[in-house]
Length: 313
Image 1 (cartoon, rainbow, N blue to C red):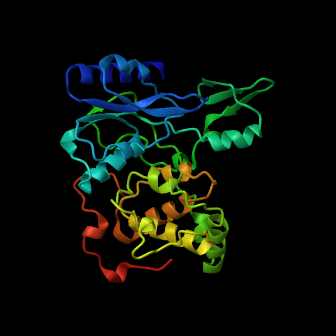
Image 2: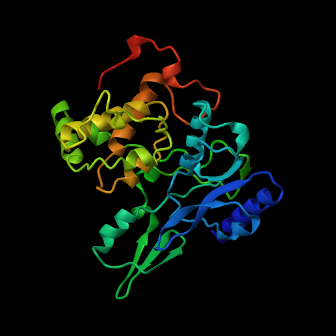
Image 3: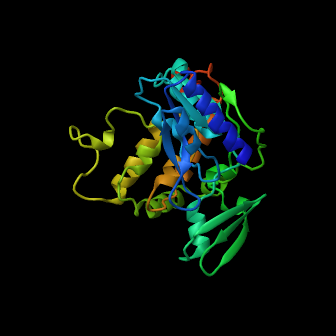
C-alpha cells in the first residue's frame, strides 16, 4: 500500500508540475480512523497530502461536473465507470480529464465496524495482510477485512478501472459473487411492498443519497419543484418517501454503476442498495446493458428495444 501511495503522489506532482492538469482530485487522511476524505490538490507540493487505503470510499466522479479546468482524478473501478457514463451523457469532456486508475481491493464499511464495536471508541487501526486490527482504550479486535467491506464491494465485478490514462498498482481480482438481490426477488409483491415501506419509513428526506450520486445531475430535481409539487414540503410520510426513491431510481436507470454511494450516504441506514441493485439487474436483463463498461455502446434508453423481450418482475 505504501508503494501505491508513493506512486500516486509522484504521478499527481508530475501532472501538476508539467501543467498537464490544473487540479488533482484524490483523498487525504481524515480526522477519524478508517476515514479518508476527498481533497483538491492544485500545487505540486500539496501532492504529499494524497493517500490511499480502505477508507477511500467516496465516488470522486461526483466532483467532476461544471469544472472549467483540466482535472486529474484518482479513480478506482466504480469511479472510472461513473466517469465513463458522465462522458457518454455529455456531462464532462473526455479531453478535460486525466484518469489515474487505481485497482481496488474494496472499502471498509464503518457502519459494520461500529456494529462490531457496539459503542466502544475506535482509536487506532492496523492493516496486516487480509486482517485489520481495531484498537481502543481497553480492547483489541482482530478481524478479516472481507467481513467489514461494503456490500457494494462484495458484489463488485469491476474492481479495476475500465477507463484510464495512467494505471498504477497491480490489477485486483474479481473474487466476490453477485447474488445479494436474490432474496428480494423471491418475495411476493405484497412482501416487497411491506419491506420497502418498513425501510423507507425511516427516511427523513435529507436527499443525501441524491447528493452523493454522481449520476443525479439534473439542474433541478423533481423533489425540489413547487410547480407542480410532487412531494409534500411540510410533512414526511412513507408514501412520499417511496415515491421519491422510486423516481430517483428510475431516473438513473442505465446510468447507475452500482457504486453504493447513495447507500453509504444515508444517515438512517436505509437499505437503498436493494433498489439500485434490482434496477441495475433489470437493465442488464431487459437491455443487455451494463453501465460504465463500454464508451462506444449507446445507453439503453437511447437505443431501440423489442417490446416482446420486456417482462414484469
